[in-house]
Length: 329
Image 1 (cartoon, rainbow, N blue to C red):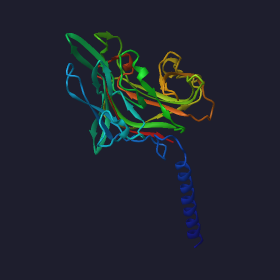
Image 2: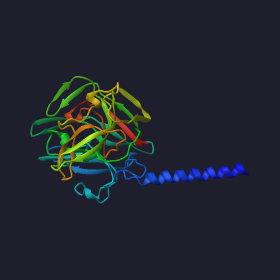
Image 3: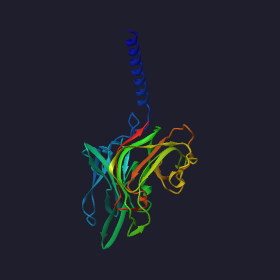
Image 4: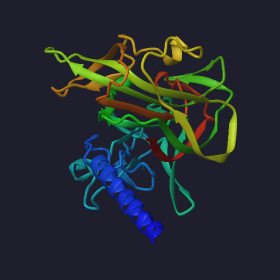
């Protein structure tokens, strides 16, 4: 009888502790883009919407599907994005460009997988012939958290059109997701014409946790709190399910695997842009490494089929599939 009574007490205590921990966790305000369990909204990648763009007749004249992750009201059209679910953190390189003509680019595509969907990121060259002028532009598929500033008005410095990152205060131990990939061998650079570039292509995943602040002039700075980065070469034709990439916190320059080129701070050369409190796009500069135990204010997270895609460099063979993204606590 005493054993039974003790077991009941232990069980009740266990439920109480579980309830308290879940309740405490649910009250943590990570971001409007993150649910009560600290997961990014729509991170299963099963919810997609499509914006429809009618391209200029001097181009394809076709209706282009610009896919995004999240939900959208059925009554919304391309020019009424206020009806889009504002809790989706996800942006893509599927963009609307207006460079005299209306142009649509789709390199991020929902692909059926089992009972739901996964995300297919692909690198391709778009070929156009405008009034006798041939234009070849290489575009990589990128899924990221943040905002694409549209319409895009030119090909110069495309990174200036991407506001990188979302508010985020969690401290995950790792990022987990399913993936497969084919990283192409022959790389090219294509803007107006096509030239060969040495080296193999790489797909890429990265997470960067930052503590950001803004000065009186609207400049944005950050310290690096934690991060992880992975490149993928060759071919992985079968799904790798539940791959885990640990997040390393603090100053990583003392680690034996430290590589300044791939793990270093974001310099002040315009590699990353963000929208400041005034709604202006400004370069983000990382000034140093965060202190031990310091919490972030923002998260940068992205997956891309070609690691130098923003420079219009990649392989048209490169495809990166991603699914079931999860933050591990």
